[in-house]
Structure formats: structure tokens, C-alpha cells
Amino acid sequence: MTKKANDYFGLDWIISLILAIIPFTSWICGIVTRFMEGKILAGVLRIIPFFGFVIWVVDLVCMITKKSIWRLL
Image 1 (cartoon, rainbow, N blue to C red):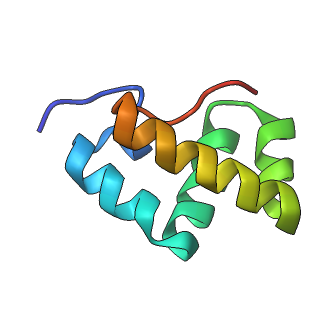
Image 2: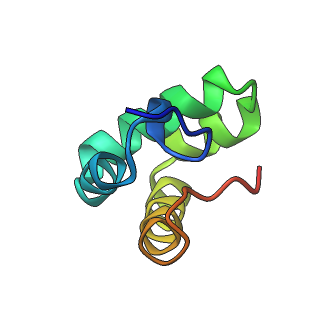
């Protein structure tokens, strides 16, 4: 398995896509990966319900179209 900086924990794209589709795992993986990258604001925003849902939808769309999670914040 090759390590990619754009997916959850460096996992392959298909595994990261499966994790991104499931809301609970996407929420947990998103929070953990944001804090691991040192992006505290992005991690905190994922905890807040409305922002967490919006970021989940954007992550899912980006994962399907660009094959990487969204890294704005």
C-alpha cells in the first residue's frame, strides 16, 4: 500500500472513500486527521454539527471527483 498525504491516514483511495461515505467514520477520521496535520480550527469545526455536516458533504464530493479529501482549512 502506498502512502498518500491526501487520503485518510495514508490509506488507499478506495478505503478512504468507504470511510468517507459512512458519516460516523468520516466524522472521526476527519477530526483525527485534521488534528494530526496541526489544523486545530478545521478539527474543531468538524465537531460542530452544522459545520461537520457541510464539511462531510464537501469531503465526500471531493473524494469522489478529485480522489482526495478537501484541505481548505
